[in-house]
Length: 287
Ligand SMILES: C[S@@+](CC[C@H](N)C(=O)[O-])C[C@H]1O[C@@H](n2cnc3c(N)ncnc32)[C@H](O)[C@@H]1O
Image (cartoon, rainbow, N blue to C red; front, side, top):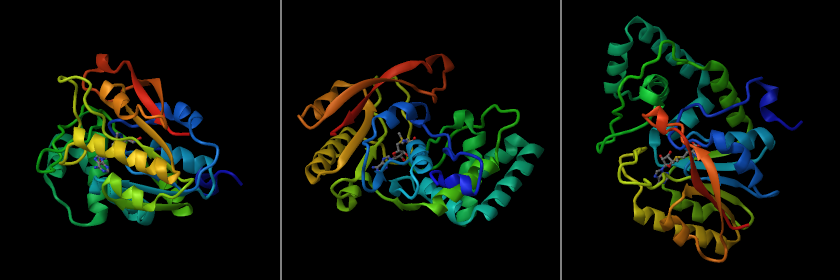
């Protein structure tokens, strides 16, 4: 039996949030660039987890370790795995209230600060489905600040996919942590694969910048990431990295271990739909 999800659900699991920088459109090219064999799969900037769900669907019992600095997002992964029925009931409740008065309900949920893990996760998923452009953006205090989107009938519950994600996370060996990306150096061993998809530096001063957490990803974080990649390379880990097509990134990965490929990508989150056109980005690996 190859595909784990087919035991319990007919829906192929896919990202349960729309996330800036999501890699769904790049799965074919990322798949071509995976090594044939590897030990544990690490993804320290998990976001919506497009590549994780692809790997779990293709490889029965693949051991994985995922993490992110956004604590609400990390909580969503564990809540979906552990408490799917309660989560779906809570989302259905949001859906009913939204249909009574979408504007006032959206802003009341946006202002709320629930304590329980079910309510926190259903708030995140509800806002992601109903906010402008499915964007996740917080202000310097960490408060979600995206306005209401213009949807006539948003798919707020999406029960089939949530159950499928829950099943595959339960059936697989996935460790889920909230932490900074650098912690992966302690855990990854020779032969393991680490895929990094960090927030990209804006390619121009006017480019949109997305804040996934209340701490921006700075030039010094990018340098920290390049050092980490070199340390993982020295340990014998397989490293795959996505990043923007910039001189800064090419310079940081100009060492002989690194193969740098330019690939065409589509940016799906841009407030101006005419700017959602193809652009190039870099795919960098050491194997
Ligand atoms: C480009 S997104 C990843 C997108 C993901 N590959 C997908 O398919 O949806 C980058 C992620 O890095 C996380 N992040 C930002 N700074 C971080 C840090 N210092 N350590 C770990 N994660 C961080 C953000 O919360 C965000 O989820």
